[in-house]
Length: 123
Length: 108
View 1 (cartoon, chains in turn brown, cyan):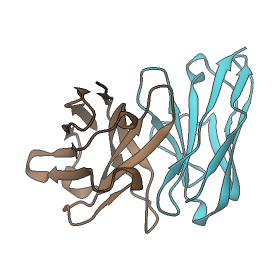
View 2 (tube, chains in turn yellow, purple; view 1 turned 30 degrees about the horizontal axis):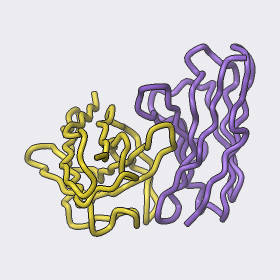
View 3 (cartoon, rainbow over the protein chains, first blue to last red; view 1 turned 180 degrees about the horizontal axis):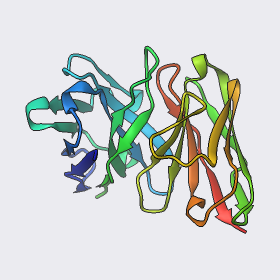
């Protein structure tokens, strides 16, 4: 059974930093692209970043470029999101998600999701 | 960036009725790279449909997807009590991938 479990969320002041983690199990983690997606309270879904199987390619939504860094450790079956210079508008539930098999050349759907971890940016 | 519009915003129906949800794109979605997700309160989204019409693993056949180009539809043939939720479409034919704002299906 595919499982994705996020951790690391919490309350942080504007300008602060936080590191999210996602522990994967039930599949060969090193064979899949992985993504982070966020959802502000009461709002819709926004893709944040993704990373290739070996970590050699990473992509970000414009609003987090230069502030967030996605990474992975295939030996530990783990995905990470380092978030710096946090803003109030980064407040959201952050989901870790696995990318599907039948993708376009530039993007993909997300076939499994974790339960999410809440990040609140407030003074 | 492709903008997705979903309609209606809210659909009020009774169990057993048919639900038809629309997703319209601001530009053509190449090769029907469109997915649908279901999200219940307090839960993560669940993939229902990818490639516009292919059901994901374990999804009941009362869920079906159709469409191409800029107009896509998710149909739930007979609503079960567990189907009342918010539904999102997502395009992945061009970067960045984008999601629609969602359609809430609630009990009439």
